[in-house]
Image (cartoon, rainbow, N blue to C red; front, side, top):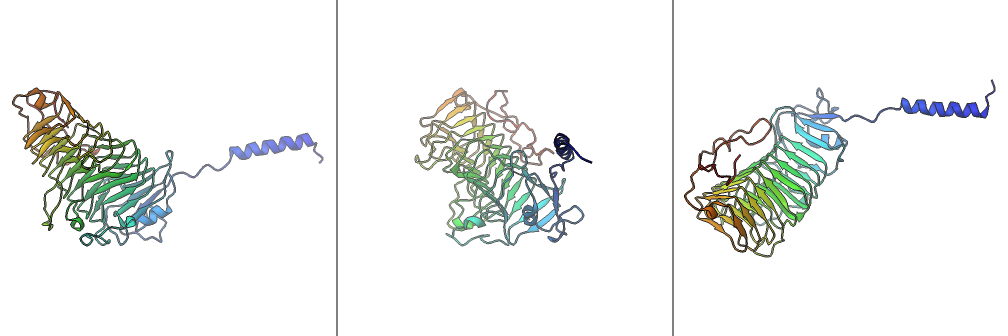
Length: 395
């Protein structure tokens, strides 16, 4: 049968349209599974899981979820995350359901390192990240040369992590890193015999830059150096609804001990540090071996609002290191000194108002105990003023 050129063209157009209608859809996001009983030769399904997180990371593509079954995963090399997702298709690395996942770095190098040694960059962290658009959820990272170490990381979410008993800072973010959310972190018992206790913090966002980094609902306690440290980070960091306590004590009998012991160290270096306008609100700092809150030489316009310093060995609010901190509606109670103001300004704080301050409760059991099911800190009357004043933190 003979066809005209017009009919052939119409048929081609119709065929192309039909092909477009029935074109295979884009591949859907996949969940890959890891289990202590798995094998890296498996397919990574729930019934045939991988054995290692690293194999799952290598296999995953942007948008995928890696679900890790409960158990302890002893590392022989650290977990490396070096590929990035996208805003529309982030990677997710999470515990499976409510199962408890422990990533144990005890067998890695530098656990601890020799006194005075330097940890090579790639070996920092039981989980070492140089990537963006990841979500890490409900994992425990222990006994590593750092717990989580993230350098050059952007647009990540770290949710309900526990980083403890590591041989350096529990969680460290540094380098050019922006728009990261660290929410409901518990970081405790981290220490560094390698540096005589002067370096291991609960959480460090330091030696870098990048706007939009937020810490919310963190509890940072019993770390050898500071609870939180923003050493030489040049961009503003937001800290909300958090606790730092019991930091700076030598619980490990480390010789030549040099832990600092501040609850929150907000940048700096004796007046030579960068001027970063960190913002702290609704945060407690108590029972630390040095200051509750300190600018540490940060010359920037820090703001500390509705926060509480309680029974710290030195100053509750130590902001005389060159900063132009603005202190508003804070409570200082039972510290060696309430405030060292320097050129900073203060209004509506307990020491501005004066008088005798009592609180509804000094019982820490609720605020330091089990979290709510969503990971948030349980509400209590811990250090809430008895007179009902809107002064100091309340969680």
